[in-house]
Image 1 (tube, rainbow, N blue to C red):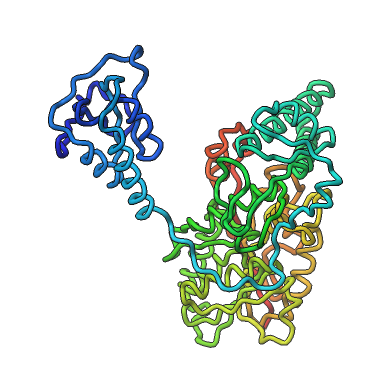
Image 2 (image 1 turned 90 degrees about the horizontal axis):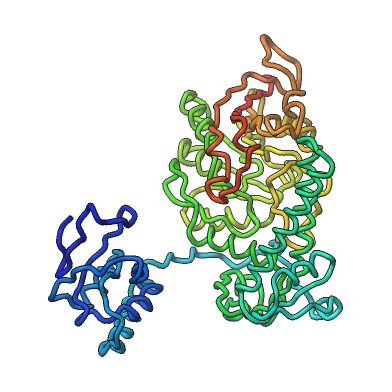
Length: 512
């Protein structure tokens, strides 16, 4: 480990820090007291030491200056303080100002840029704020730092409501208490009734629905002009000035949805097979993993170099979502004309913004399957990447109030595939292909007895007079660990780890 400008690393055998984080020894007289370093830790990624009683004092080299520490931190390094006496620090003021300058400099160089957005299109879905009349009618309990989170959660679970007026932390603690109540209810039902696996899943969905309903009765005031929730310690809500103006009240569900969506929009989602990251807009369904079905499509196109090779070839990305399939086709077949459509206005707006952002040639339309494509020229290929799980009967339609509770695009309605195979032939040229990217995930989970595509025949061995002929089914396994969220949530989702599932490419052709 090399020496850096007056610093000397600890001996490797004594270092207990994570890989990539070095611990340095410095002179207390010039670097400052341990209490200043503890204050600098939050802003400068400075690793504070364990209590003095828990670890011995360490030798510190002479000749160390605090600006050197700041330069190391500003360059992205990390420092662990050790061996500094707790005494009054004569350099405290200069250290604080220098720390602030280093923090601002680091933030300016590391903060991600907000992607450019066109003017918000009419009809884009957004969470609907709570009116002041509805808040008054609910008579919510005012929640401050002195309130008991468990008592507030019990009140809300029983049908009451709460308005948070102090700290953002209070909201997080009440939501945590709501989760604990839901879990206890689920465990009590399982112990009392001896439920089998399927009824347990139904009970879990019921509790989750109750938890969502309870969270809708948690209210937070916000100021759209500066994108801030009116709570101490609340994160910035970048979508507030995009969607709203003035003062408003939001539900806890919608706040969570806006926060998560903004992080993905700003940071982007990078797929290895695309040249640039995608920035999905709020309300657009996407998933960073698995990607095996996208790889399956790319391999299928690579093995058929003549497919879509004609400069007049037309491809439809049906249900485009965040546009992954469109950008794959645009990259592999740059001469083909690509049309993307989706029923969700947010998906249409998101892909239109992505097309402008990256300068690719893709036409984007809003359409419920083929209903918005009447009068268009037929296509040489239609690629459909539908949801993999069926829609639960108790899922509400969020089109009137936004997507704060249930995201759109992650489940399919019962009539979807009947409509697909009934309408697709009219929009295909003779000999055109319908490619469906699917999965047996729902079958492995026990959500359905058989794939909804199985009803449309088996691979044909000869000529067919049917509107669409199934040519082949290609499958590729997806490891259980890649589809489980256990690594992110640390929850033991046994159903996600029990069985491997396969992604599928179903190839249909319209007879010549």
